[in-house]
Figure (cartoon, helix red, strand yellow):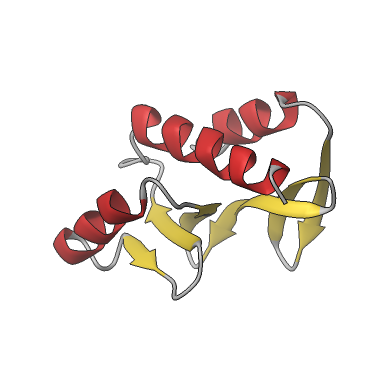
Length: 107
């Protein structure tokens, strides 16, 4: 099975001052000790968690349309779930990943 999170992991690891680790079964990416991405396989699907502020409304709209694929937490974390056959759109995850990283750097 092709891993649709591989490109996310590569991009996350290329930002400045990033530490990669593991949290439970997910890969975690941090900058300055603050996490900005959790990603991995879960329950036969894939999951990515991003910190969002500017894109929160976009995430809320997606969660209303596809609640099994997108969840908006009470804080800044947004969860996206997807499969190898129907991966998260590259434009969207790149935008969210960039935003998540920048939010974590500002801490």
